[in-house]
Length: 425
Image (cartoon, rainbow, N blue to C red):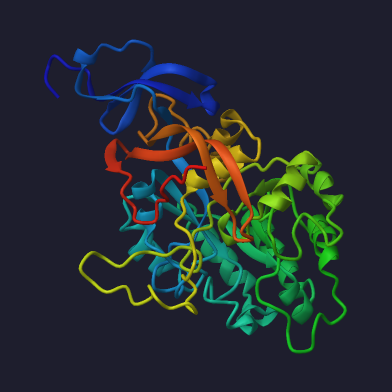
């Protein structure tokens, strides 16, 4: 920086939305030494070494994806590259949901969090095996495969990385073992003083003996009393049995009681998301707190590098077959297509997840002094078709697409191969 300049970088002329700071308007954002230095109107361009004109764009605190699967290679086809769904997709912070366990956390720290350009945190799996391909090996997720003491010890020893606990409340597990695994997971959360993130919606399939007397529509009402203020209910709009909408097509009455109790809701979009059921829940007043993308190798086709064959391109039986490209920003567009405003959606990927992670004021904001994590989006007006895994289509009148982001002041362009292209209606 020369003696005549005060800032390293100036983002000039964009619409800055920072819910944590109560800012929404045309502002300039100045960066110095990798941190936000100022957010105000009409900062002199000459005061910065580099100036980027972001006129007509949205300038947000760095987006936070509360539901990622980035323990690449270790979690089989679930784990995708962290920076592909992170900074290359306009997302500066990722929360891996249940990939690492108390046994595999050192590997996650060294090979994933320690190597990624994206800030990478974790909700530690309640299960010793972590996020392996459980739908193939459900017996690895029994009560015998949970070590409460070891998981609490690992969580407490790694507070910089572990921000919560991941568990599953789904009919396949309940049919095999009842509610015991969830009881163990919530005990881990209490003893570690961390939020518990609970997957709802069928996942592993029923055992050969069937449901064993379990009713999928009673799982929520049995699990919610075990949870504490700050715990998270995931996949509210799942198309699979066991979500917020029961088999009669009604929003479960326990959901409002859960919200009143201080529980949070994370969309966990991915392949669980149903526009049809989301409309029912939103119309009933159920507005999610946070918006995790839930991108993994079973719902996202990662193209092979240029010049190399794509071994899955023509395999109709492969999990990638027929799956669309996706991103957290596309999930934001999904929520807006359902009638939520931009002003409602932005906190779901900025200030609210920062609170969920116990990092309010440190991330998810552009407050001067914090690390300069910034996401810049284009908002394209028009009519665009969005489609879920039930093949239900909605038409959006605008589409958000990432342009670039800054992670601690370093620029990363939105070049991820999984980013979807706009499809006009």
